[in-house]
Length: 482
Image 1 (cartoon, rainbow, N blue to C red):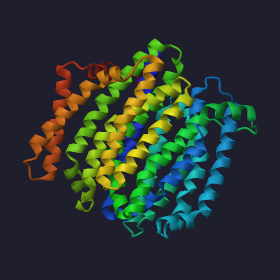
Image 2 (cartoon, rainbow, N blue to C red):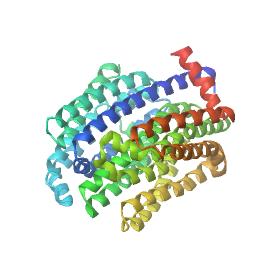
Image 3 (cartoon, one colour):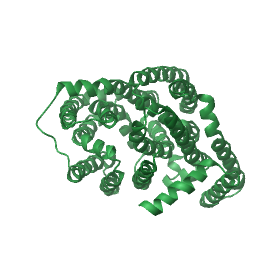
Image 4 (cartoon, rainbow, N blue to C red):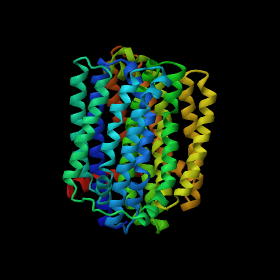
Protein backbone atom coordinates (compact mmCIF):
# COMPACT_ATOMS: atom_id res chain seq x y z
CA UNK A 1 0.00 0.00 0.00
CA UNK A 2 1.46 3.33 -0.97
CA UNK A 3 2.28 5.58 1.92
CA UNK A 4 -0.03 8.34 0.66
CA UNK A 5 -2.85 5.86 0.28
CA UNK A 6 -2.18 4.47 3.75
CA UNK A 7 -2.23 7.94 5.25
CA UNK A 8 -5.46 8.80 3.46
CA UNK A 9 -7.01 5.54 4.59
CA UNK A 10 -6.00 5.97 8.23
CA UNK A 11 -7.19 9.56 8.22
CA UNK A 12 -10.50 8.42 6.78
CA UNK A 13 -10.72 5.61 9.31
CA UNK A 14 -10.09 7.96 12.21
CA UNK A 15 -12.81 10.36 11.05
CA UNK A 16 -15.15 7.47 10.32
CA UNK A 17 -14.53 6.08 13.80
CA UNK A 18 -15.10 9.57 15.19
CA UNK A 19 -18.40 9.78 13.33
CA UNK A 20 -19.62 6.34 14.33
CA UNK A 21 -18.54 6.48 17.95
CA UNK A 22 -19.78 10.02 18.54
CA UNK A 23 -23.03 9.17 16.76
CA UNK A 24 -23.47 5.88 18.59
CA UNK A 25 -22.40 7.52 21.84
CA UNK A 26 -25.05 10.21 21.48
CA UNK A 27 -27.68 7.64 20.52
CA UNK A 28 -26.57 5.40 23.38
CA UNK A 29 -26.99 8.17 25.98
CA UNK A 30 -30.31 9.21 24.47
CA UNK A 31 -31.42 5.59 24.44
CA UNK A 32 -30.65 5.27 28.13
CA UNK A 33 -32.68 8.38 28.97
CA UNK A 34 -35.61 7.20 26.84
CA UNK A 35 -35.54 3.63 28.20
CA UNK A 36 -35.78 4.95 31.74
CA UNK A 37 -39.08 6.65 30.83
CA UNK A 38 -40.60 4.51 28.09
CA UNK A 39 -41.83 0.94 28.53
CA UNK A 40 -40.55 -2.26 26.87
CA UNK A 41 -43.84 -2.44 24.94
CA UNK A 42 -43.12 0.98 23.36
CA UNK A 43 -39.85 -0.36 21.96
CA UNK A 44 -41.64 -3.55 21.01
CA UNK A 45 -44.13 -1.68 18.81
CA UNK A 46 -41.32 0.12 16.99
CA UNK A 47 -39.57 -3.24 16.60
CA UNK A 48 -42.68 -4.65 14.91
CA UNK A 49 -42.30 -2.08 12.13
CA UNK A 50 -38.58 -2.58 11.64
CA UNK A 51 -38.89 -5.23 8.94
CA UNK A 52 -41.06 -3.01 6.74
CA UNK A 53 -38.78 0.01 6.93
CA UNK A 54 -35.61 -2.10 6.57
CA UNK A 55 -36.79 -3.87 3.41
CA UNK A 56 -38.05 -0.58 1.96
CA UNK A 57 -34.74 1.16 2.60
CA UNK A 58 -32.92 -1.71 0.88
CA UNK A 59 -35.18 -1.35 -2.14
CA UNK A 60 -34.49 2.39 -2.30
CA UNK A 61 -30.74 1.89 -2.38
CA UNK A 62 -30.97 -1.15 -4.70
CA UNK A 63 -27.23 -1.70 -4.39
CA UNK A 64 -26.62 1.47 -6.43
CA UNK A 65 -24.60 3.18 -3.71
CA UNK A 66 -22.10 0.33 -3.57
CA UNK A 67 -22.06 0.12 -7.36
CA UNK A 68 -21.21 3.85 -7.60
CA UNK A 69 -18.37 3.52 -5.09
CA UNK A 70 -16.93 0.51 -6.90
CA UNK A 71 -17.17 2.04 -10.38
CA UNK A 72 -13.98 4.04 -10.96
CA UNK A 73 -15.23 5.64 -14.23
CA UNK A 74 -18.59 6.87 -12.91
CA UNK A 75 -20.17 9.80 -14.79
CA UNK A 76 -22.67 12.57 -14.09
CA UNK A 77 -25.19 10.49 -16.00
CA UNK A 78 -24.64 7.58 -13.60
CA UNK A 79 -25.19 9.84 -10.62
CA UNK A 80 -28.32 11.52 -11.97
CA UNK A 81 -29.80 8.19 -13.03
CA UNK A 82 -29.29 6.80 -9.55
CA UNK A 83 -30.76 9.93 -7.97
CA UNK A 84 -34.02 9.88 -9.94
CA UNK A 85 -34.46 6.15 -9.59
CA UNK A 86 -34.09 6.39 -5.81
CA UNK A 87 -36.66 9.18 -5.53
CA UNK A 88 -39.30 7.28 -7.54
CA UNK A 89 -38.78 4.13 -5.50
CA UNK A 90 -38.86 6.13 -2.25
CA UNK A 91 -42.26 7.70 -2.98
CA UNK A 92 -43.76 4.45 -4.26
CA UNK A 93 -42.70 2.58 -1.13
CA UNK A 94 -44.00 5.33 1.13
CA UNK A 95 -47.49 5.11 -0.36
CA UNK A 96 -47.41 1.32 -0.25
CA UNK A 97 -46.68 1.40 3.49
CA UNK A 98 -49.12 4.27 4.06
CA UNK A 99 -52.05 2.29 2.64
CA UNK A 100 -50.87 -0.97 4.23
CA UNK A 101 -51.05 0.41 7.77
CA UNK A 102 -54.29 -1.32 8.69
CA UNK A 103 -53.03 -4.67 7.40
CA UNK A 104 -49.87 -4.37 9.50
CA UNK A 105 -51.92 -3.40 12.56
CA UNK A 106 -54.25 -6.37 12.07
CA UNK A 107 -51.34 -8.79 11.61
CA UNK A 108 -49.91 -7.87 15.01
CA UNK A 109 -53.31 -7.11 16.54
CA UNK A 110 -51.98 -3.68 17.57
CA UNK A 111 -54.16 -0.83 16.18
CA UNK A 112 -51.65 1.94 16.91
CA UNK A 113 -49.22 0.50 14.34
CA UNK A 114 -51.43 1.81 11.52
CA UNK A 115 -50.63 5.41 12.49
CA UNK A 116 -47.02 4.70 13.48
CA UNK A 117 -46.05 3.28 10.07
CA UNK A 118 -47.45 6.34 8.25
CA UNK A 119 -45.05 8.59 10.15
CA UNK A 120 -42.08 6.20 10.25
CA UNK A 121 -42.18 5.75 6.46
CA UNK A 122 -41.54 9.46 5.86
CA UNK A 123 -37.87 8.68 6.49
CA UNK A 124 -37.82 6.59 3.30
CA UNK A 125 -38.48 9.65 1.15
CA UNK A 126 -35.88 11.68 3.03
CA UNK A 127 -33.23 8.97 2.61
CA UNK A 128 -33.95 8.57 -1.10
CA UNK A 129 -33.14 12.26 -1.63
CA UNK A 130 -29.56 12.06 -0.37
CA UNK A 131 -28.15 8.59 -1.16
CA UNK A 132 -26.01 9.91 -4.04
CA UNK A 133 -24.57 12.75 -1.97
CA UNK A 134 -23.50 10.35 0.75
CA UNK A 135 -22.00 7.94 -1.77
CA UNK A 136 -19.90 10.78 -3.21
CA UNK A 137 -18.55 11.69 0.22
CA UNK A 138 -17.60 8.02 0.69
CA UNK A 139 -15.90 7.87 -2.72
CA UNK A 140 -13.79 10.91 -1.75
CA UNK A 141 -13.21 9.28 1.66
CA UNK A 142 -14.52 12.50 3.21
CA UNK A 143 -15.75 11.07 6.48
CA UNK A 144 -15.11 14.31 8.35
CA UNK A 145 -18.10 15.99 6.70
CA UNK A 146 -20.24 12.89 7.17
CA UNK A 147 -19.29 12.86 10.84
CA UNK A 148 -20.49 16.43 11.32
CA UNK A 149 -23.78 15.73 9.54
CA UNK A 150 -24.48 12.52 11.45
CA UNK A 151 -23.76 14.07 14.83
CA UNK A 152 -25.97 17.11 14.16
CA UNK A 153 -28.79 14.83 12.99
CA UNK A 154 -28.41 12.65 16.08
CA UNK A 155 -28.50 15.66 18.40
CA UNK A 156 -31.71 16.90 16.79
CA UNK A 157 -33.25 13.45 17.07
CA UNK A 158 -32.15 13.08 20.67
CA UNK A 159 -33.33 16.48 21.80
CA UNK A 160 -36.74 15.89 20.25
CA UNK A 161 -37.02 12.37 21.66
CA UNK A 162 -36.10 13.32 25.21
CA UNK A 163 -38.42 16.33 25.20
CA UNK A 164 -41.35 14.28 23.92
CA UNK A 165 -40.68 11.32 26.23
CA UNK A 166 -40.54 13.42 29.37
CA UNK A 167 -43.73 15.27 28.40
CA UNK A 168 -45.74 12.07 27.99
CA UNK A 169 -45.78 11.28 24.26
CA UNK A 170 -44.90 7.61 24.77
CA UNK A 171 -43.96 5.63 21.68
CA UNK A 172 -44.21 8.77 19.51
CA UNK A 173 -41.05 9.93 21.27
CA UNK A 174 -39.17 7.35 19.21
CA UNK A 175 -40.96 7.85 15.89
CA UNK A 176 -41.27 11.61 15.24
CA UNK A 177 -37.75 12.62 16.34
CA UNK A 178 -36.34 10.06 13.90
CA UNK A 179 -38.13 11.86 11.08
CA UNK A 180 -36.88 15.28 12.26
CA UNK A 181 -33.30 14.03 12.47
CA UNK A 182 -33.54 12.46 9.02
CA UNK A 183 -34.76 15.75 7.55
CA UNK A 184 -31.86 17.68 9.08
CA UNK A 185 -29.37 15.09 7.81
CA UNK A 186 -30.82 15.28 4.28
CA UNK A 187 -30.70 19.09 4.22
CA UNK A 188 -27.09 19.17 5.43
CA UNK A 189 -25.97 16.62 2.85
CA UNK A 190 -27.43 18.84 0.13
CA UNK A 191 -25.88 22.00 1.57
CA UNK A 192 -22.37 20.56 2.01
CA UNK A 193 -22.30 18.52 -1.19
CA UNK A 194 -21.35 20.39 -4.35
CA UNK A 195 -23.03 17.80 -6.54
CA UNK A 196 -26.44 18.51 -8.07
CA UNK A 197 -28.46 16.26 -10.39
CA UNK A 198 -28.88 17.19 -14.03
CA UNK A 199 -31.97 16.53 -16.15
CA UNK A 200 -30.78 13.27 -17.65
CA UNK A 201 -31.58 9.62 -17.22
CA UNK A 202 -29.84 6.74 -18.97
CA UNK A 203 -31.25 3.23 -19.18
CA UNK A 204 -27.80 2.08 -20.24
CA UNK A 205 -26.34 3.50 -17.04
CA UNK A 206 -29.20 1.98 -15.04
CA UNK A 207 -28.59 -1.48 -16.48
CA UNK A 208 -24.85 -1.27 -15.81
CA UNK A 209 -25.24 -0.18 -12.19
CA UNK A 210 -28.19 -2.45 -11.55
CA UNK A 211 -26.30 -5.38 -13.09
CA UNK A 212 -23.90 -5.23 -10.19
CA UNK A 213 -26.28 -3.82 -7.60
CA UNK A 214 -29.20 -6.17 -8.27
CA UNK A 215 -27.45 -9.10 -6.60
CA UNK A 216 -26.68 -6.92 -3.60
CA UNK A 217 -30.31 -5.74 -3.65
CA UNK A 218 -31.65 -9.29 -3.45
CA UNK A 219 -29.09 -10.16 -0.79
CA UNK A 220 -30.03 -7.00 1.11
CA UNK A 221 -33.74 -7.81 1.02
CA UNK A 222 -33.09 -11.34 2.21
CA UNK A 223 -30.83 -10.00 4.97
CA UNK A 224 -33.41 -7.40 6.05
CA UNK A 225 -36.17 -10.00 6.26
CA UNK A 226 -33.92 -12.49 8.02
CA UNK A 227 -32.60 -9.91 10.52
CA UNK A 228 -36.18 -9.08 11.51
CA UNK A 229 -37.58 -12.61 11.56
CA UNK A 230 -36.79 -12.90 15.24
CA UNK A 231 -38.79 -9.75 15.96
CA UNK A 232 -41.75 -11.09 13.99
CA UNK A 233 -41.67 -14.47 15.76
CA UNK A 234 -41.28 -12.93 19.23
CA UNK A 235 -44.05 -10.38 18.62
CA UNK A 236 -46.48 -13.03 17.35
CA UNK A 237 -45.52 -15.88 19.71
CA UNK A 238 -44.93 -13.86 22.88
CA UNK A 239 -45.74 -10.13 23.29
CA UNK A 240 -44.69 -6.57 22.50
CA UNK A 241 -43.06 -6.41 25.95
CA UNK A 242 -40.97 -9.53 25.25
CA UNK A 243 -39.96 -8.03 21.93
CA UNK A 244 -38.95 -4.86 23.76
CA UNK A 245 -36.57 -6.85 25.97
CA UNK A 246 -35.10 -8.60 22.94
CA UNK A 247 -34.67 -5.41 20.89
CA UNK A 248 -32.83 -3.70 23.77
CA UNK A 249 -30.48 -6.67 24.12
CA UNK A 250 -29.98 -6.91 20.38
CA UNK A 251 -29.36 -3.17 20.13
CA UNK A 252 -26.74 -3.09 22.88
CA UNK A 253 -24.96 -6.19 21.58
CA UNK A 254 -24.89 -4.77 18.05
CA UNK A 255 -23.61 -1.35 19.12
CA UNK A 256 -19.84 -2.03 19.33
CA UNK A 257 -19.71 -4.76 16.68
CA UNK A 258 -21.65 -2.95 13.98
CA UNK A 259 -20.12 0.46 14.72
CA UNK A 260 -16.58 -0.80 14.27
CA UNK A 261 -17.45 -3.13 11.39
CA UNK A 262 -19.30 -0.52 9.38
CA UNK A 263 -16.53 2.00 10.01
CA UNK A 264 -13.95 -0.41 8.63
CA UNK A 265 -16.22 -1.31 5.72
CA UNK A 266 -16.89 2.30 4.71
CA UNK A 267 -13.24 3.29 4.78
CA UNK A 268 -11.62 0.15 3.39
CA UNK A 269 -14.10 -0.61 0.61
CA UNK A 270 -12.98 2.26 -1.66
CA UNK A 271 -9.38 1.47 -0.68
CA UNK A 272 -9.64 -2.23 -1.50
CA UNK A 273 -11.39 -1.41 -4.77
CA UNK A 274 -8.26 0.47 -5.82
CA UNK A 275 -6.08 -2.63 -5.28
CA UNK A 276 -8.68 -5.21 -6.34
CA UNK A 277 -6.45 -6.61 -9.11
CA UNK A 278 -3.35 -7.06 -6.92
CA UNK A 279 -4.12 -10.26 -5.01
CA UNK A 280 -0.92 -10.19 -2.94
CA UNK A 281 -1.52 -6.66 -1.69
CA UNK A 282 -5.23 -7.41 -1.23
CA UNK A 283 -4.41 -10.51 0.80
CA UNK A 284 -1.98 -8.78 3.17
CA UNK A 285 -4.30 -5.79 3.68
CA UNK A 286 -7.28 -8.05 4.25
CA UNK A 287 -5.47 -10.15 6.86
CA UNK A 288 -4.40 -7.03 8.67
CA UNK A 289 -8.00 -5.79 8.78
CA UNK A 290 -9.28 -9.12 10.08
CA UNK A 291 -6.75 -9.19 12.91
CA UNK A 292 -7.25 -5.53 13.80
CA UNK A 293 -11.05 -5.87 13.87
CA UNK A 294 -10.85 -8.83 16.24
CA UNK A 295 -8.35 -7.01 18.47
CA UNK A 296 -10.76 -4.09 18.91
CA UNK A 297 -14.16 -5.82 18.93
CA UNK A 298 -13.51 -9.00 20.96
CA UNK A 299 -12.60 -7.38 24.31
CA UNK A 300 -15.48 -4.91 24.10
CA UNK A 301 -18.01 -7.71 23.54
CA UNK A 302 -16.60 -9.84 26.36
CA UNK A 303 -16.57 -6.84 28.70
CA UNK A 304 -20.22 -6.13 27.85
CA UNK A 305 -21.25 -9.76 28.35
CA UNK A 306 -19.42 -10.06 31.67
CA UNK A 307 -20.83 -6.85 33.17
CA UNK A 308 -24.26 -7.06 31.52
CA UNK A 309 -26.31 -7.22 34.72
CA UNK A 310 -24.80 -4.22 36.53
CA UNK A 311 -24.70 -2.20 33.31
CA UNK A 312 -28.37 -2.80 32.49
CA UNK A 313 -29.49 -2.13 36.06
CA UNK A 314 -27.53 1.09 36.41
CA UNK A 315 -28.29 2.45 32.93
CA UNK A 316 -31.96 1.68 32.34
CA UNK A 317 -33.16 0.36 35.74
CA UNK A 318 -34.11 -3.14 36.78
CA UNK A 319 -37.39 -3.04 34.81
CA UNK A 320 -35.20 -4.20 31.90
CA UNK A 321 -33.42 -6.95 33.84
CA UNK A 322 -35.03 -9.70 31.73
CA UNK A 323 -32.91 -8.66 28.75
CA UNK A 324 -29.61 -9.50 30.53
CA UNK A 325 -29.29 -13.19 29.51
CA UNK A 326 -30.28 -12.30 25.93
CA UNK A 327 -27.58 -9.62 25.87
CA UNK A 328 -24.88 -11.95 27.18
CA UNK A 329 -25.54 -14.63 24.56
CA UNK A 330 -25.83 -12.15 21.70
CA UNK A 331 -22.53 -10.49 22.68
CA UNK A 332 -20.72 -13.82 22.26
CA UNK A 333 -22.43 -14.37 18.90
CA UNK A 334 -21.69 -10.92 17.52
CA UNK A 335 -18.00 -11.11 18.26
CA UNK A 336 -17.87 -12.75 14.83
CA UNK A 337 -19.84 -10.01 13.08
CA UNK A 338 -16.79 -8.00 11.89
CA UNK A 339 -15.31 -11.15 10.36
CA UNK A 340 -18.52 -11.73 8.38
CA UNK A 341 -18.58 -8.11 7.18
CA UNK A 342 -15.00 -8.21 5.94
CA UNK A 343 -15.54 -11.53 4.15
CA UNK A 344 -18.61 -10.10 2.41
CA UNK A 345 -16.65 -6.95 1.68
CA UNK A 346 -14.04 -8.94 -0.22
CA UNK A 347 -16.65 -10.55 -2.47
CA UNK A 348 -17.95 -7.11 -3.46
CA UNK A 349 -14.45 -5.77 -4.05
CA UNK A 350 -13.73 -8.65 -6.43
CA UNK A 351 -16.97 -7.95 -8.27
CA UNK A 352 -18.53 -11.27 -7.23
CA UNK A 353 -21.98 -9.98 -6.33
CA UNK A 354 -23.36 -13.23 -7.80
CA UNK A 355 -21.35 -15.26 -5.31
CA UNK A 356 -22.29 -12.81 -2.56
CA UNK A 357 -25.95 -13.53 -3.27
CA UNK A 358 -25.53 -17.32 -3.35
CA UNK A 359 -23.64 -17.34 -0.09
CA UNK A 360 -26.18 -15.05 1.55
CA UNK A 361 -29.07 -17.27 0.50
CA UNK A 362 -27.28 -20.34 1.86
CA UNK A 363 -26.61 -18.63 5.20
CA UNK A 364 -30.17 -17.43 5.55
CA UNK A 365 -31.54 -20.91 4.86
CA UNK A 366 -29.35 -22.23 7.67
CA UNK A 367 -30.47 -19.40 9.94
CA UNK A 368 -34.18 -20.00 9.31
CA UNK A 369 -33.79 -23.70 10.04
CA UNK A 370 -32.08 -22.86 13.34
CA UNK A 371 -34.83 -20.34 14.17
CA UNK A 372 -37.59 -22.89 13.50
CA UNK A 373 -35.88 -25.40 15.77
CA UNK A 374 -35.20 -23.01 18.65
CA UNK A 375 -38.36 -20.83 18.62
CA UNK A 376 -40.46 -23.46 20.39
CA UNK A 377 -38.14 -23.40 23.42
CA UNK A 378 -38.21 -19.68 24.21
CA UNK A 379 -36.25 -16.50 23.57
CA UNK A 380 -33.05 -17.64 25.31
CA UNK A 381 -32.81 -20.64 23.01
CA UNK A 382 -33.50 -18.38 20.05
CA UNK A 383 -30.48 -16.29 21.09
CA UNK A 384 -28.38 -19.45 21.40
CA UNK A 385 -29.56 -20.30 17.89
CA UNK A 386 -28.16 -16.98 16.66
CA UNK A 387 -24.79 -17.94 18.15
CA UNK A 388 -24.88 -21.32 16.42
CA UNK A 389 -25.85 -19.66 13.13
CA UNK A 390 -22.93 -17.20 13.31
CA UNK A 391 -20.48 -20.06 13.79
CA UNK A 392 -21.88 -21.91 10.77
CA UNK A 393 -21.79 -18.68 8.74
CA UNK A 394 -18.08 -18.35 9.50
CA UNK A 395 -17.39 -21.70 7.83
CA UNK A 396 -19.45 -20.75 4.77
CA UNK A 397 -17.89 -17.29 4.36
CA UNK A 398 -14.28 -18.31 4.79
CA UNK A 399 -14.60 -21.23 2.38
CA UNK A 400 -15.26 -18.89 -0.54
CA UNK A 401 -12.84 -16.14 0.44
CA UNK A 402 -10.23 -18.86 0.70
CA UNK A 403 -10.86 -19.68 -2.94
CA UNK A 404 -10.76 -16.02 -4.04
CA UNK A 405 -7.47 -14.89 -2.47
CA UNK A 406 -6.29 -17.99 -0.62
CA UNK A 407 -7.30 -16.86 2.89
CA UNK A 408 -9.47 -19.65 4.25
CA UNK A 409 -10.85 -20.56 7.66
CA UNK A 410 -7.56 -21.84 9.07
CA UNK A 411 -5.67 -18.67 8.22
CA UNK A 412 -8.41 -16.35 9.48
CA UNK A 413 -8.76 -18.26 12.75
CA UNK A 414 -5.00 -18.02 13.20
CA UNK A 415 -5.20 -14.24 12.74
CA UNK A 416 -7.98 -13.73 15.30
CA UNK A 417 -7.03 -16.42 17.85
CA UNK A 418 -4.63 -14.26 19.94
CA UNK A 419 -7.30 -11.59 20.44
CA UNK A 420 -9.91 -14.25 21.28
CA UNK A 421 -7.76 -15.93 23.94
CA UNK A 422 -6.77 -12.59 25.43
CA UNK A 423 -10.39 -11.37 25.54
CA UNK A 424 -11.76 -14.56 27.13
CA UNK A 425 -9.07 -14.49 29.82
CA UNK A 426 -9.85 -10.81 30.43
CA UNK A 427 -13.54 -11.69 30.91
CA UNK A 428 -12.64 -14.42 33.41
CA UNK A 429 -10.53 -12.02 35.44
CA UNK A 430 -13.26 -9.35 35.45
CA UNK A 431 -15.86 -11.89 36.59
CA UNK A 432 -13.60 -13.34 39.28
CA UNK A 433 -12.77 -9.95 40.75
CA UNK A 434 -16.24 -8.35 40.59
CA UNK A 435 -18.47 -11.25 41.68
CA UNK A 436 -17.83 -10.55 45.38
CA UNK A 437 -18.51 -6.82 45.11
CA UNK A 438 -21.96 -5.71 46.30
CA UNK A 439 -22.25 -2.39 44.49
CA UNK A 440 -23.09 -2.55 40.78
CA UNK A 441 -21.38 0.81 40.25
CA UNK A 442 -18.17 -0.47 41.85
CA UNK A 443 -18.38 -3.66 39.76
CA UNK A 444 -18.50 -1.60 36.56
CA UNK A 445 -15.67 0.75 37.58
CA UNK A 446 -13.30 -1.91 38.96
CA UNK A 447 -14.13 -4.41 36.22
CA UNK A 448 -13.53 -1.87 33.45
CA UNK A 449 -10.23 -0.62 34.86
CA UNK A 450 -8.89 -4.12 35.50
CA UNK A 451 -10.05 -5.30 32.07
CA UNK A 452 -8.41 -2.44 30.17
CA UNK A 453 -5.13 -2.67 32.08
CA UNK A 454 -4.96 -6.45 31.67
CA UNK A 455 -5.80 -6.44 27.96
CA UNK A 456 -3.40 -3.69 26.91
CA UNK A 457 -0.51 -4.75 29.15
CA UNK A 458 -0.77 -8.40 28.12
CA UNK A 459 -0.94 -7.44 24.43
CA UNK A 460 2.15 -5.28 24.96
CA UNK A 461 4.06 -8.02 26.79
CA UNK A 462 3.35 -10.58 24.07
CA UNK A 463 3.96 -7.97 21.35
CA UNK A 464 0.71 -8.56 19.49
CA UNK A 465 1.10 -7.09 16.02
CA UNK A 466 -2.32 -5.43 16.19
CA UNK A 467 -1.30 -3.27 19.15
CA UNK A 468 1.99 -2.42 17.50
CA UNK A 469 0.13 -1.45 14.33
CA UNK A 470 -2.17 0.86 16.26
CA UNK A 471 0.76 2.46 18.08
CA UNK A 472 2.93 2.89 15.02
CA UNK A 473 0.44 4.02 12.43
CA UNK A 474 -2.87 5.20 13.83
CA UNK A 475 -1.53 7.34 16.66
CA UNK A 476 1.34 8.76 14.62
CA UNK A 477 -0.93 9.57 11.68
CA UNK A 478 -3.47 11.12 14.00
CA UNK A 479 -0.85 13.44 15.45
CA UNK A 480 0.96 14.16 12.25
CA UNK A 481 -1.72 14.39 9.58
CA UNK A 482 -4.97 15.57 11.12
